[in-house]
Image 1 (spheres, rainbow, N blue to C red):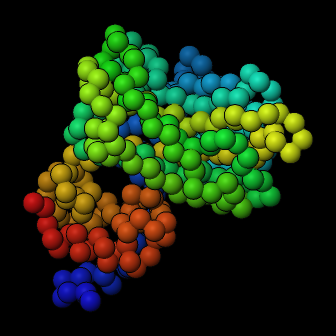
Image 2 (cartoon, rainbow, N blue to C red):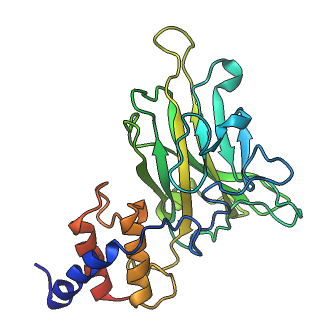
Length: 284
């Protein structure tokens, strides 16, 4: 049963949801550069800045004006097509490259055991197509401080469905502190995390076994939860106020996985009720 606070605020939230039509893939909480792939690399216009491709074609940096293109927001997305030969078994896009001035990598920073890391976004499989591969999804590679660059540990996640019927489907994967601790103690500790949308075919090429289906990816986000048990603090400032509600509403109206408060894959009243309960509890 909703308490008095929730009963008053729920109608207000429903009224406000329609006022927040824009995605927040590039807001200040997102640790990714060029999360929506909108900005091309000035030196290599066939690639989005902040991203490098493995075994992809220049056309896989998708423009909204391309024939048959699928773009969720803005003008660009990225694409991973089924492998056609041995050299294409692994395909992907990575943030593990230097910034133009050479000062640092595009990999988002990571504070070791400083809180869970969540990567989210949207993917689309065209209508009538089905993904057939060993793994199609996201990989997070936790890396040590340059000039070491070595991978401390990695976590792979498959997209939740092999078909989206031509609709954009949200996804969200979390690497918890407990998962990181389970890897073991192998100093030096990681200081950054590579974001890697990828697909890998581990089978045999041939009739009935070759990979199938194309996947488009857009509006990625990666955050590290420094809140320490304050799930309603969507601005990560340690204070619960109107700005947290507004941030939640923006996410909710765009069906961003971070607003799926009860983690059931749907965006409905129950997510709002869960958020309200967390908000009313306050921060520890």
